[in-house]
Image (cartoon, rainbow over all chains, first blue to last red; front, side, top):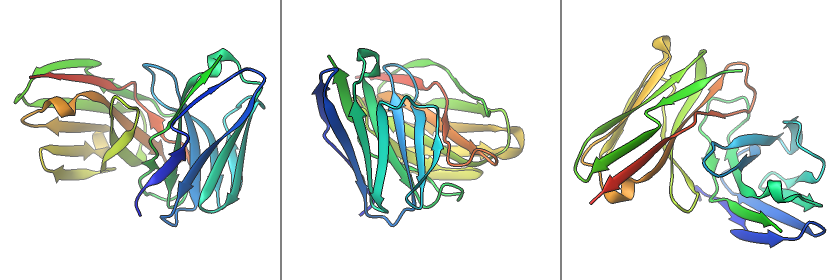
Length: 114
Length: 110
């Protein structure tokens, strides 16, 4: 299995809703990442998990709450989002955050906040 | 942090044409990848190439790490090659963080 699987593919949520994005990989990778991509822009890093511990938070607002329950699974919990948070959310994994290995990205969740 | 510049920003081709995309980076890197983002948003890894030359079918890439640039060659382009091509790098001090260039938007007409 050489894939990173993200669910759901599309999500529409209101500003008062709570929702979660899910990411799963079975490649034995020990680093997992959340990236955010706005239209016509490159992806930007949000969070890095290494060995199930949060190691980087790129000053992301607290309405985004990441969680890594085990080495294969990464969640992003969403609460009280704003319309400007609408974007493509990409999950990625690699053998290690400090290792010289390539990153594998999932197909993303396209989020719309109304 | 490390800076990544891609050129050209836009490229329009007729099917069958060849093209070269360029990526310049501002510091030494230990990870460089080329991705193709399809219209549905998926980032497809084309090459992991921090140095040297690799080929995969009609695509090939070369990274000259000492001169801080990488090139992606697309030969005999097809309409399915359309999309955005990103170069992304990680420098030695950039723990975990892959920094992307602004991308090259490629449109291949039949």
